[in-house]
Image (cartoon, rainbow, N blue to C red):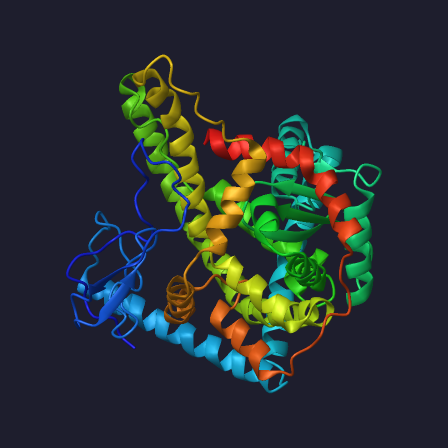
Length: 467
């Protein structure tokens, strides 16, 4: 339903606390107030957006400095969102009924043809460059060297296994790798190659290199706020991407998509030097020539990238639904539901982290202002930070969960091309029989995994608190 215009927009989270705030993530007392649009009573929690579940006033708060949208552009955006919404809903009905997505085979063939053209273009340039080097005179050999250098830039990127400080070795994390391998076997995937952790509120699975090693990336903020069974559901979902038939993750199509995006980035004209006074005229002329020569190519490449994304997005979203189903089979439907609902709280996590960071930075100043005999302020340790985060998410009120789900429904046409909107993913789980867990962790296994992640909890908590 359309959302009435709000008399005054508010931010999606409450502002950062004053320096004197003792615990910015502690549950706040709800204060009933009247909706400014329909006068219904709202139980407002000052930590979250104030909105009305009756008329949906302020369901999607806009920043005060949001740029104005022209009527023509707003109408065009509305048409695109309506088309995207219709496609998303159509795909959901197909998946819920067990039907193959409409036009999926034709879209896959068209995407494969584009991927083949991309790889043949790279191969043809490589062959031409080698031929010039072997048969040409000195100028042609120089041209051949340039062509081969361009081929190196345009080559498909297969990725490589990470070697950063977030990587956990099998010998150093046997319990975590053991759990991951058990979940992988349960969904029919091969053992994980590399597990790494980072500071994102997310998780992902990728396949890299010629050997196609799987890399599981766990965002520690996401992992830490999940329950044990929800963590199993997370692993089940991520390993589900290895067996859910998503061609965009395959070698042929995936590398072509990455190559096209890289080609566009290289061809896109830039104007980095226009503000250099001494060379302004020279670089303006150079930018003009580059814009003429490369601008058309960049627009063409962008159009192909968008076409390839459109051709594969339905299959990608269908694969995401299948990954949810596999997660439910492994960890239970209920755990998967909790996982999906928690995934909507990324803004809440960022706000809670910012508040703890502000509190931490304010304490030295407060101590300097206080008397010399005042007791020292307690230090927020890394473990205390994670506990604060868990407590904050545990106290998110039902009204905020409802707002996030309704916002997911409202913005379903604008969702990214790789994930269906969360409310539809939950609806699909509801349409199917509830499944019990087939795999779970023991207390000893959970404690061992926590011990293996302890050094990374300390390191990433410090990173997040440092801002």
